[in-house]
Each structure stands twice: as structure tokens, then as C-alpha cells.
Amino acid sequence: MGICPTDTRPLLGDNFTGGLRHWARPEVLTCTSWRAPIIWDGIFDPHEAEQEARRQNLTIGLTVFAVGRYLEKYLEHFLESAEQHFMVGQSVVYYVFTDRPEAVPYIALGQGRLLRVEPVLRESRWQDVSMARMHTLHEALGGPLGQEADYVFCLDVDQHFTGNFGPEALSDLVAQLHAWHYRWPRWLLPYERDKRSAAALGLGEGDFYYHAAVFGGSVAALRKLTAHCALGQQRDRERGIEALWHDESHLNKFFWLYKPTKLLSPEFCWDQKIGWKPEIHCPRLLWEPKEYALVRN
Ligand code: UDP
Ligand code: MN
Image (cartoon, rainbow, N blue to C red; front, side, top):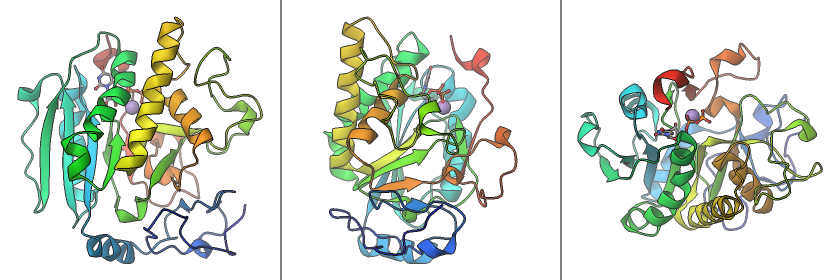
């Protein structure tokens, strides 16, 4: 493993440093080959990051989709836990995309925090609900959401916050290391391998395997990301094919072509089923148990 002692200046175009201390976690990789920090517990000062964000007077968006049975099953716990842990002390706007706006639960929000409900149509296949997020987000980022927020995190609903998820996670383009795959050799990673797909990666390609349950960044960067993924999905559909892990495959292709400026360690989106690992100090989000029989059609 390597740390990044030579140059810890923020990347060009990224004016948010978040109080980094790379040397604090010598046992894990805290910097990519393209000099993007990998955020592990202890390598940043949360107070410094909070103050930096407040000085910049940021509004941070959090988008989440709760379509069909995912609404009753997950949304309330997701939002209530976000009130406890997500960007506490900052201006936050939740954007809940759902096919049933009237069923969105009432949540008491802290000061400086808003919730907006955005109606969407329900796709019949769960894979299509998941993939349609890219196009819907692209449109939303080009509208009032994109005007209102400076940075946006786009999250799956089938998880809940268990620890501080603060401004240390902000950057121009943020990717989440997948909890199940961060120790795997590159050639084994579950990228799309069918060359006909827009999401295809060759055996020598790919840096890390990223989890589509968490990605974020500036509005401009996310406009580009969502356009790329939505277009790739559209091309595949026209060819009658679908990438192995749907929007996640296209997201991984995008992050290979356009490197993220910050990576979140698996502590930011952890699955307890993996069991105890010494490097996982403080999980920020935990996966809910996969109860597909209950939520998928
Ligand atoms: N989703 C939804 N309704 C559906 C299918 C998916 O609201 O019928 C949304 C929800 O936010 C979910 C995300 O799309 O968390 C991705 O789907 P899922 O979590 O089932 O995929 P997985 O994480 O298992 O790959
Ligand atoms: Mn999920």
C-alpha cells in the first residue's frame, strides 16, 4: 500500500481540500495513481472540512429514488438517518424522486434543510428503474436542482447512515469503492466485458470497481456523468443488449474515461455481511439486507 506524501495539493479544478492528512492511515491506499485522495477515517479533520464548507456557503443536494415498494421499505429510515449524519450543519436539500409523491413520509428536518419531492413514472422492470435514474438526474441537474445545489450526492435508498458523512466527501467528481470488490485483482472485477456494450472494459482496463449506490460531485461534473451513462444505456438498448450491472457498469466505464477527483473508502458504504475487517473503522452508510422478493417485481 502507498500513501501520497509527495504532493497533497488539491487537484486542478477542485477547490475543496477537506483538511486531508494522508499519513494517518499508512496501512491502506489513500491516493490514486492520478493523485485523487481516497478518504479513509482519520485522514481528514472533520471540523476543518465543515468549516471550509461553511466558509464557501455551500448548498449540498442529496438525490434518492424511491419507486414502487422501495418507498415503504426504505425511505423513512434512509431520510431519518440522513438527518442524523449527512452533512450536519450545512445547507442540505433532499430530492426524493418517486412515482407516489403522496406516500412520502413526513420527516422533521433540521434548520437549513429542505426536502423536495420530484414525481417520476414507474418503469416496469427494476433494472429500468435503476437505469432511468441517469436520464432523470441529467434533466434535473439541468433545471432548478442544478441552480440550487453546488454539490450533489446521488444515493441508493436501500441503505441507512450510521456515521458522520460530512464535507470531507465533497469534490468535483466523487466515486465510491465497492465494499465487496476493493481487495480484488483488476482482471476479476465484474465490469461489462461484452465489447458490443457501451460499458465494455478490456481485461487491462479499469482502476477500481465503483459502487453505483453512491456517487457525487459538482453539478457540471454530474451533468457530464449522467449524460454519458444515459447515452450508453440508450445505445445498448438500441442494440438489444443490457450491461451486466446496468447503470453501475456504465458508471464504471465513465470513471475509467474521466477519473474521479476523490474516492470514498468502503467505510462510506459498507455491507455488514462482509464481516469484520481491521481497516473498516467507522462505517458511514450500511446496506440494508437485500430483500428482493419483497421489493422487486
Ligand atoms: N429503485 C427503486 N425502485 C425499484 C428499483 C430501484 O426505487 O423498483 C431505486 C432505489 O433507490 C434503489 C436503486 O434504484 O436503491 C438501485 O436498485 P437496487 O438497490 O435494487 O440495486 P442494487 O443495489 O441491489 O444493485
Ligand atoms: Mn441498492
